[in-house]
Length: 321
Image 1 (cartoon, rainbow, N blue to C red):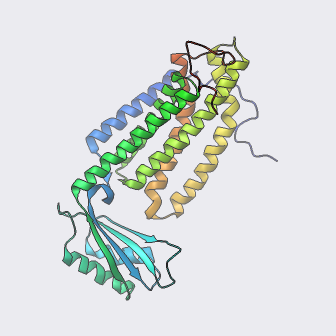
Image 2 (image 1 turned 135 degrees about the horizontal axis):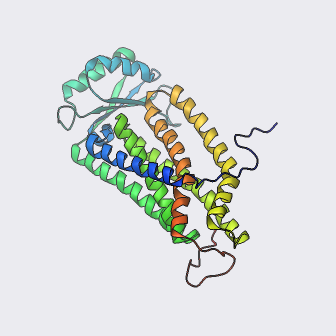
Image 3 (image 1 turned 30 degrees about the horizontal axis):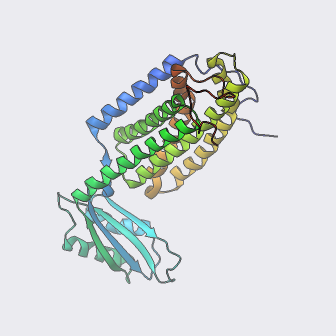
């Protein structure tokens, strides 16, 4: 028996509550921006500046034991991760310990590093510090700027790609949906004060890729149906396209969320922020693909007959796959 999360053939009107859903999205975007400006983001070590210590020991790295050993030193924000490399020998167990800048200082003091080493050697007696590097506030500021430029550049590239593949109206709708997803993700991190670091930026870029894939699937079916139903009302064709792809959308998002929820519960603190960002992004990305992107396309209007070349609309790349 095949598992079905939605009926085989649906005929739901996704524009029935368009004003309510579109209005809710606008309110959510405004609230997210206000929260971002008012509360700011809880930047992690990557963006605050601090010191990164690389350790090596003959004993196996147990992150929880390392964290417990440093728990009583009052170091503030500390991130510990094990480093895997196939070239390492059996007695080369490497970890990275990142300590946030304290009291406005660019780096932790030599005394603090000695305390860290002593505490960790209680867990791993053969432990050595193979490198100690500090990141100052200036570099951290540059990292924040580079991170947001990376997100902006990805949105611009997607805007260009969708314009080549479809029409500019689709491009505007897709990028508006992605902007919606990114702002709501930043907003939830600001409201809940979840740590925002480079892993979160990676999660946002993943969300952008996931959301645009969902949107392109619907847009592709819409383009096929525009050729098939040339005289049918555009709103009806859009509803038909979303209904025809709904099963795929729900199954993909549902199975992805099951895996992400398992990671969120069992994955531990190290990846919790990253997984939360992607899980949140899957939810808002699925919503925006159905309720935001196509609403904007309907508002802007589109070329109806994709089977004939149109000298006034589109371009030579419009049928590119």
